[in-house]
Amino acid sequence: MTSKIKVDNINKVSDDSNIIKKCGSTTTVGSGSGQTIVVDGATVTLGRCGGAVNLASGATQSGFGRTGTVDWQTSSIKTSTFTATSGEGYFVNTTSGAVTVNLPAGVAGAIVGLKDYAGTWDTNAVTLNPNGSDKIGGGNALDPTLEIKGGAALLVFVDSTQGWLTTQESVTESPSGVETFICASGGNTTVTCGNFKTHIFTSSGTFTVNSIGTAPNNVVDYTVVAGGAGGGSNNYGGGSVPRGSGGGGAGGMRFFSTAPGSNHPINNSGASPNTTITVTATGFPITIGAGGAGAPSGSPDAGSDGAASVFSTVTSAGGGKGGGHCNSTTGTGGSGGGGRNAVTGGAGNTPPTAPPQGNPGGDGGASSGSYRGSGGGGAGGAGIDGDTSTPDYGAGGVGAYIADPFIGPTAPSYGTPGPVSSVRYFAGGGSGSPGPGGAISGPLGGGGGAKGAAGTANTGGGGGANSPGAGAAGGSGIVMIRYKFQ
Image (tube, rainbow, N blue to C red; front, side):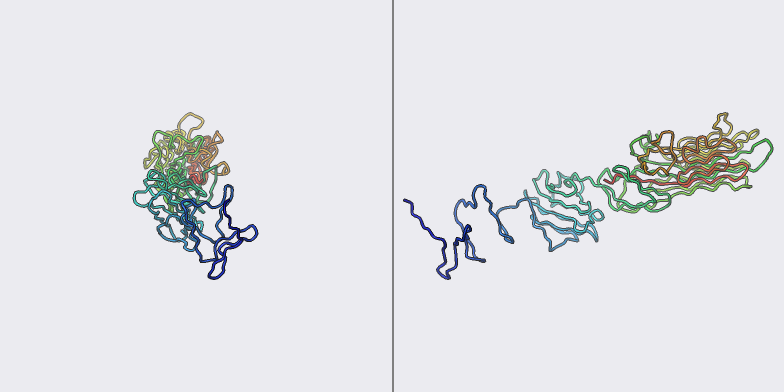
């Protein structure tokens, strides 16, 4: 028969304190705080199958290994470069500037946690700097950054092949595959269309990139339209012989557009791709070119050139002035001004860009007979000659179009609608005088019709010519910048 010892309590001899105490359904082992209990044996089993072993509130453990969590260092908020320790989590405050985190040496199972303390990672990012030749997410050429507002990441070192990977992240994937986006401000209007924002500048200002994204999200779409030129005037002569003058050339139009839908062939899908712009986290001054003045009444002369519009490395030239009486010279520019009285139209695409930013103005009518003025050039076509027999004689050149998603369907006031509702036209030439005017340039690009109609503001349209009377002013330019924001 097996021997048994039956007791409820075992007490120490020295002070009669409990070593083992049975009280109801609870058995307590130990004689109070500060005492160590050693259980010796090759295998020690605590609890039973289906049961639970709990640490008391406030107790700590050691020697059991990590469980995929970190100890958050709430007493030390990080505001500058620091070296992380495996097993710890850090609240990183980038309010005053970017912070670099030097990761510990890569040992399988090493773990580090990071959390945006003040919601400022989108303004000042956290850069992860691996130790020595350790990799992050399989190895990037550049150190990845954490730049999402309110972000949090739990990084675990797996092995030498993949290095550090994120096992938990509140807003993004592992650093090697994080897709982040531009955060920017500026413009007179901001339009959202799907995952894209378009900042529209109708007056000069600054496009401020507060934070950049990952490639290729830092390449932006843009439309840069310069100011259109003023139309010419001619008060000379009378009777049954009309005296013509030339329409103002449209402002140059340069753009790069990945917007879905129909974009004009001069965009990046054409034979000569447009300049691409990759932004950085800085301010980009925006210049909106003014429209040129029309020739005043009683002054048989040419109008005035339009002014250039600028965004980053892209400059669109102002339109060339429309010709007036006395064979006055037409202007060259983004698109050229229309000629009068056998004067050749002004050259477009000056200075030259690839693809071209505009077209030449039409040639003036013969120096005897009708003296018809010609149309100024547009971004999408040349001005019509003054002595043609077509119904559109002397009309301004057609503008170029971009797809509605570039601007956003909720912003119908920009540009002029085309025959297809999904596109908008800019930079149409001004019509010559006398002539029907407006047949092409009016609805397609903002160019002014004959008899002194002004170019539409913020389209870069050329001003219409007039005779007799004052030539009309060209329309001011516009700059639009589109990027993926989510």
